[in-house]
Image (cartoon, rainbow, N blue to C red; front, side):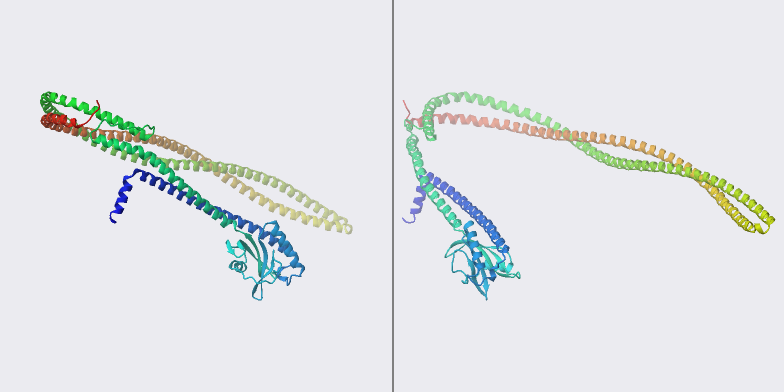
Length: 578
């Protein structure tokens, strides 16, 4: 009995729709509650994180304010040796003010004295100075790493706290202690615990209320179902007079109405079977004759389908050959398109090179124009140099004539001085000097004349060279103009060729797409025709099978007539309404 107990429980569970509905609703509620619990846990975790972030921000701000105060006063906490010092009183009063103003739990200074950790100042405690207080790992970390350190939320005999520490320096800049602030952090675990209790309470209420609702819902569903089941058992036993009396507008009410309609239809069906069985017996003779006629018609259809199948096979062969030809044309057209694209790329490259050459010729032509202008300026400068040389020659000629006349005057003066005698000696000396100057001027003028003559000859040679260079530049400019025109003609021709190549490529691509469409269409037509051929074969085979089937139908008609008699005797077991 003990071994069969679990099977009985499982069978009872499977056989009770109310148990299934209640269990399903409870499972759904459990899933919803689990999802709600997870979301509540995540919300609690997020809220806790935000609260801790607020604590960190608040501790950081408060410790910065206290640190600024400690650095702004002349007194140093490490110099405090007792409670009676003014510095101790001043700093502790300010710490108490910070504590009250910012709602802090503790503000304190801890210091290492002779390898002992002790309190220097602690708010809210009178006997604070000198009390031993071991440094926590966060305090030692703040001193060792010389940076601000914030502890995790921790619990001790005084409550739940979160603290911040900064190293405290002496006059020499050495870390000698800790400046710390404590905040009451009991709100964090308290909030977390309240959320958990709220989640548990809501989950419990939902499960209890949901279970009650599931029980009443399953009961309201199963009661009419049980009533419907009992009436169904009567109908299954052959009693078609039983009816379901359920007055509801929901799905169960619709099911009851549908069952009543089914019972009425089944009642009508049994009545019709009585009359139909008589008709079957009467029409069997007519079916014999129709079956013979259908057999002969099926034979004729098979012969016609075979003839049509041969014609379709020839069409399929022609379409296959056409498709192969179109594929070959499409392949050749693709090759032509590829070659034309290569020609197009080469035309674009040649066009780009001719455009570059045209620009280079334009730059060269511009430079030749500049050279021609400079040659004209050089020719004008050479002409001006020749004119200046002529003017200098004329001036030298005048200087030479003046020197000759001066020489004659000096000679006449010497003669007159000799005639006068002793009185004219000074004048004779002056005349001699003047004569020397005249001779030197004559020699200098001769030298300058030779230089000017040489310069004029060189100027003539330069002018001739400039004229020849100018003629060469004009000839080169003419040739470059011709080259520029040739480049322009080449560029225009290449542009026309490139445009025509582009148009040809577009035309070939359209033709290629058209051939692809035609090829695809021919393949589809070939496939359809092959399917038609197969269909004709199937129709012919079906016609032959139909002829054989008609013979079987003839035999079946005889059996149907016998079955009609059996059916009449079977339906007499049903109890129908009057």
